[in-house]
Length: 159
Image 1 (cartoon, one colour):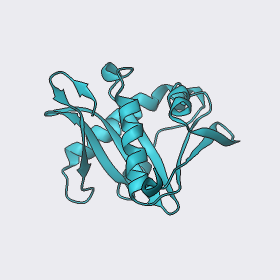
Image 2 (image 1 turned 90 degrees about the vertical axis):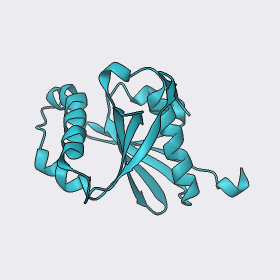
Image 3 (image 1 turned 30 degrees about the vertical axis):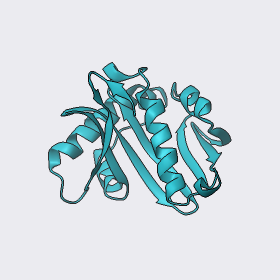
Image 4 (image 1 turned 135 degrees about the vertical axis):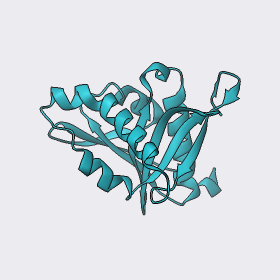
């Protein structure tokens, strides 16, 4: 459990169908804001409609401390892998251990569900690559400006 303030951080599952538009707007604003420089550096254009379509296809979790939103995690479980689609932390709360805590949580979720791999894609020049590498994810390949990373998972029953 990651502690900020006097309360522990938690990840709260978002029901993409029934949760209000404010939650989607928050997720979109945070993700777009965090990735704005990456998109600009690579000549890409943010597409709200694309984000909205994929929002309903992923498991979405708000990272919170009390009533305060600190970020979000988006997962796509496709056996045999757990794909981390988004790990977004509010800029003022970055570099305080929340990303590392979220990665450990994702790994535990993936193992609990019987996944054999944890996977993600990121920009090849993303600052987050150091965090992913320290967590155990390794470069599998590069496709243009994106890299694919993967980490084999141990069977939780054998650990």
